[in-house]
Picture (tube, rainbow, N blue to C red):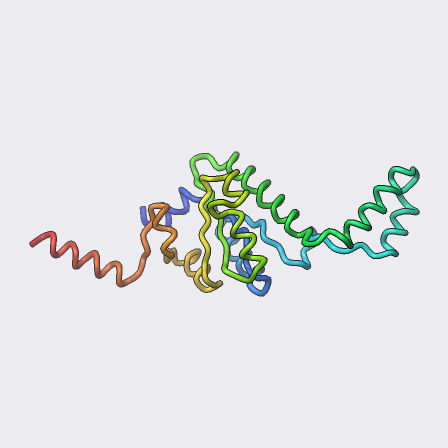
Amino acid sequence: MDLQQQFDKQVILFFVSAPEHVLLDAQVCIEGKGGFTAAFTRNDLGSPKKNGVCQILRRLFVTANSTNKARSLLNDFVASWTIQERWKMVWFGRVRQGLEMLIKIKGQKKVVAIAIKGGRQCDWEQEQLSPGGELHTLFPDTPLIIFKDLDELVNFVEKRTYPDPCNRLGFQRSTQRDASNQARDHHRDVR
């Protein structure tokens, strides 16, 4: 069994973070190889948006047949304009639920969180899965691999060229240089 087959049998990829300009391409790449995605853009249907006055009034007249429902709608309206960075709560919930489900159904496979380096939002997301982060505390056995860019992620997924963090998972980098070093080391051992 080659390294790629070994990796595919042992690992489930879970895509959690990337800059918006590469997120959709990375998602297609990960899901095309059987992985899963929790990362999303600000234009995603599940991404929190500010409620407009017309939207609230329409919902108020259609669904609010009681004072409690009307109060709830007005609270939603106020929250949509006052709570800063609501996307963090949505992201956290999506990643937590995804990890819980994948860990429950994974069998013998290891769930590996995948991310691409980005700006401050990506930094925050990746900190949550790094040592000291809240999600890392909840899921300490889920490693996070952060790729420097989309090309490095694609090379990993398509060709299984492993960045250094994969060595912790028991997989070695597959580069020509490594192969020649192994051959040289083997030659020394034979002497």
